[in-house]
Amino acid sequence: MTKKQYEVSCERIEELLQVVGNETSMNDKNFIELDFLSDLVADYEEKHFPIETPTLQEFIKLRMFEINISQVKLSEIF
Image 1 (tube, rainbow, N blue to C red):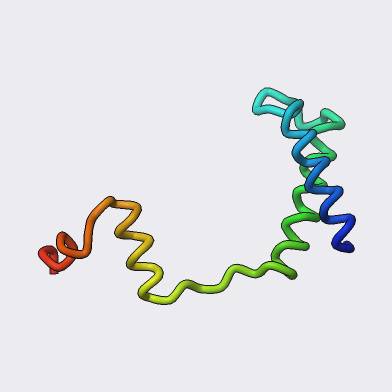
Image 2: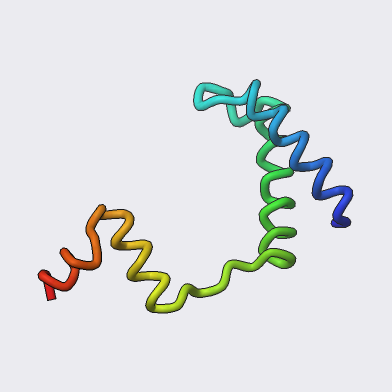
């Protein structure tokens, strides 16, 4: 897949998301197209935009944000 094909596929996915919902049959042509393009885009992104493993510091900051605690509260816990 080229970068241009990726961009066009992403645009088409956005269009399909407007017409495909939870109630859409898995045999519907729009559902099938969405499923197919989503797999292609996911493969492209995995190859060209890999998600790196976060550092311990990044992980802790994210977790603190998720549970809404400050550094002071974290220090009290420890």
